[in-house]
Length: 302
Image (cartoon, rainbow, N blue to C red; front, top):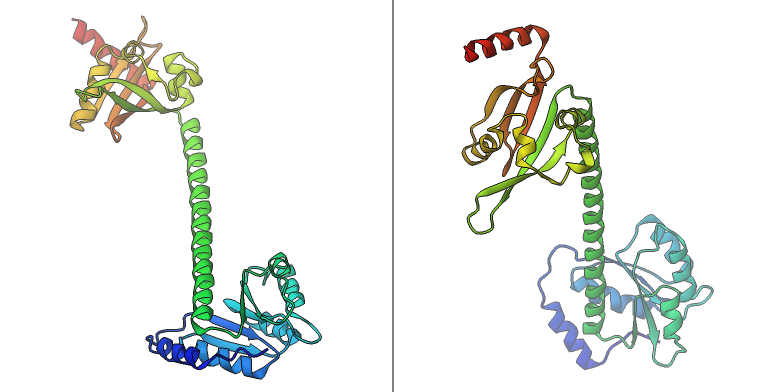
């Protein structure tokens, strides 16, 4: 059956043709064995800024689609040799064309199985005689859906790339921390909800050297609050010094020693502001520097 419209519908075409002619809105393929239908739909879509190709049989449609993928296909059902259902099934079976949306065309007096149309992969259908506004509306809907799918696909790909970069960065950071000869720990400030004063610090990251220095297990430190007593075992005033680092941004660098014998644990300790927290680095003092450090301790005691 022809897609031709009544005189009132022809007036609608005129109204629709008044729309602005912008850049092509989409690439549409029309498949119908009736030349009149091809001419009607081609003229209608061209007037609305679409790039249109048309073929009059299923086999030619498949060859055309393989060369250039359309954004949407308007596909007649009742065609000789290869009907619309068969064309749709062939396209959906091919991974390269399976995502192209297909809108079926069927006359009111033709046997049209709507359930089968959706089962073989159709996304919508238009009954003949075609109403211009309906054709344009259904096309626009599918083009918008395709654009949204493409944006979502790009967002997913971007997210995957970002996740991969993040994973690699974390792996690199872990390798650097674990292979470092210095003790490294990053702390986040825990603030009072009312006064916003720093009450404690919790551990963001810590490497094996620092874990050994504190004499703890990593699972008991990472993501946990670090007791003031534990920090102050490195330096009796360290907790308060770290608060000052966070609040003022001024770094500290000092020599610390714990235990009865300075030779057992003497290090350089550096703390710098890191977000709303700080990072601490502890480097073991070499034998040569240890002699100098002992001299300084002796001079201070005298």
